[in-house]
Image (tube, rainbow, N blue to C red):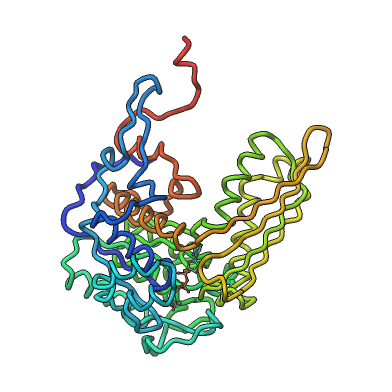
Length: 416
Ligand SMILES: NC(=O)c1ccc[n+]([C@@H]2O[C@H](COP(=O)([O-])OP(=O)(O)OC[C@H]3O[C@@H](n4cnc5c(N)ncnc54)[C@H](O)[C@@H]3O)[C@@H](O)[C@H]2O)c1
């Protein structure tokens, strides 16, 4: 394992560029502004409200994460981004209808100044949208170079010392692994040849990484998850992470499933259905975008429950996920889960969950945490995939970064 270099302090300003300025991105931007003006609390954010235990639990040392690691302050963040519509972040937030009129009025001045740059977009990858505010270029490579230029111009104009790019754009169609993703060279050749395997989200990821800028993916798209881009990230010393913010129903799955597994309770099936009416729901109404989401959602249970290791408990799970576009609900979706579990001697039981949630309210703090932790990771000299940012944040990485003892949960030290 590489030794960690000293963490550079967060000097200057941090630029945050969101690809897509829809419900999640604008709720995130508005929230940061409200929090830094002390008009609201950053509920749900580990970087803003979390603490970290150091040493034995009897030592009573649990500083806040903000005091423990040198994170950028909210006051020093500058926002920008891209979208296929020219609406300002205020107009987009109003359309998304996540925030109430009082909050919208509070952030109107701030959000009205954030105008999206023209997007690299291709309707073949998001069938339900057609945008007007899009870049023109002969090849996909030309578009990627334009994005790189956008990043540079944003950095110069706003005099930021560091930047992070995060995909908050629509879910693209499902893409399978392809030979063109093998190396940075095959990837560039594919961009130049307008190869169908190169989706717009990949152009942003390539542009960010080759600009030395960390990149996070909040959607379930393949995007940065290909050897060419993970390899490039290591070469350029850039931390990356993804994918698909775990909110709503997937949040419930990642909370409940580890509990069943810890108690060695078996599972026969998990049926999930949702109704939602925002633009994300409309995009996911297209079977090809839904397939991307479905694969990501189905993968969660398999990853947590490890059916290969526990064939008696999880070898035959019927896992179904349905998403229904239902406009009256807007961003306030409803997710129903029926979980068929079984216990001692195989006796069956059922659990029903009805989660009336607010997707973007759950996603916004994750965007903030990912952005701040990626910036920290970059300053600490970490590169490539940041496994510690997956699912639940693994706080041992923060202890390791700061040279503190790691927590083993052995418990022996209290009784010897
Ligand atoms: N809301 C959640 O809790 C949640 C959870 C997990 C994942 N996600 C994913 O996050 C993404 C954003 O969700 P949302 O609710 O904000 O959706 P949204 O539809 O409100 O916003 C997405 C924005 O991306 C823009 N866009 C699409 N393609 C683009 C491109 N190539 N370049 C630039 N902009 C582009 C769209 O015009 C739109 O404004 C979606 O992919 C969604 O599946 C959201």
